[in-house]
Length: 198
Image (cartoon, rainbow, N blue to C red):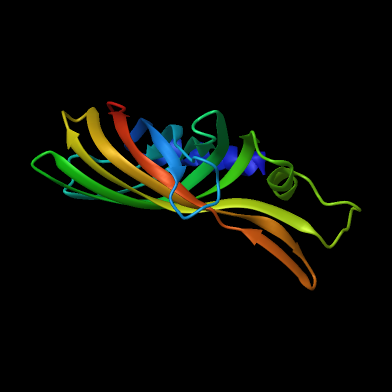
């Protein structure tokens, strides 16, 4: 799998005529009714790279992937529950006019680590329930969307506001047994993008 991902990135880098790097700083919190004691937000940060970005086009598309930290806090901010994921945006559509750009992108991701989860959710995400059963599998996916409204300072720099929302789809599946959690979280952020000059 790692070799396939590396080969994919290499092919994109060789054939892409425009590569960019992007980072977002903002907040993330639960966006649904919940029973959590005094819920709040945490710092959301993402690092992204993408291909086929051509800011001179009015209508443009690109492909991107990156790493993201998101989550929520509870107990009036005393405890932060955070997740790190690797995500992939198969297609990002943007429209630019007079240096003002609006963009929308669906994405999917895989949670790679988490902090301060309770025992129940930690078991759902990262451990097989006991006793071990070969017909049990656990998934930890995210599905979401991102919108961005930005200003193209020049061909190399863009600054914008972004909204980023996702469903966590994690649970345990087994024949005749199904247990699943789908919390919804996200928030606003400030985005900076740098287009490589080639």
